[in-house]
Length: 294
Image 1 (spheres, one colour):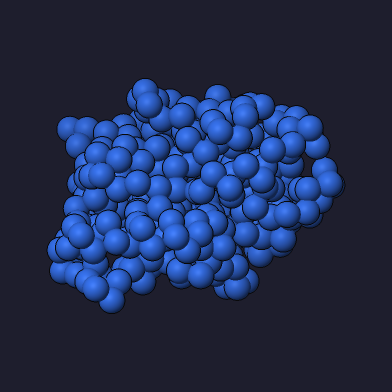
Image 2 (image 1 turned 45 degrees about the vertical axis):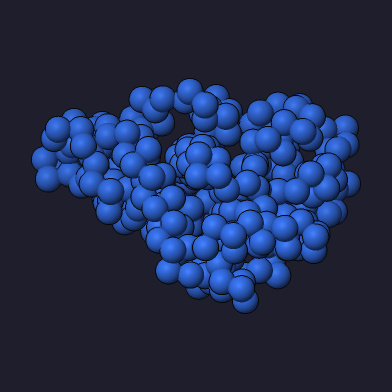
């Protein structure tokens, strides 16, 4: 199915995309993208390479599209991980080259989605591809390192995994855009995590364990946010902090509106509904979905 074959009701008209649609589809792609890294299949595939620590495995899977880059490049692209967390991936390309990590990621994605019972009928799968393919093909990748790397990866033959990879490109595109907004608002790698966890959207303990900022670094970031009036003296989110966090999300949505312009508002809404079965299946299977942060 091609974009021109879609019903007129979901074809883009003037190329604009409502920000509510951008927010909806962004949440849908994040929810569909993340569970693969939390599923046991990923750990099993990494163990085949002799990598049993989930941190380095996650970093290898997600950065493999960039090639055998040193850990410092992954640190720059991932932004909110501490250097000590990313340094732990040193040696993953000796365990297996990036192309094997990429192939293992696809294998894990397919195994995991089928284990939890992800089912998207062939017609809807084709429709989803007819929507996401022009988004990926027409995207501006300037400054979008992880998105560009993933867009360069050859799609696998498995139709469901190929859709997931296209979702990955869109997810990384928003993440790349979000990092620019964070930096533009003066939020450093640890600061953005402290602010995000203060909203209650992410468990602090999980973020601290995976990003590995130590007590001193976390405390310094907290102090900077208190000085800005975004947290109070008890490290609780203030009204100004809540407004700042929402402003950052809106700025990210505004940057992402251009990404979804090829399919417009109705197309973005439709794509979100078509890929919803992925997140729903993982949620039903009990896969935790709250660890995501660009």
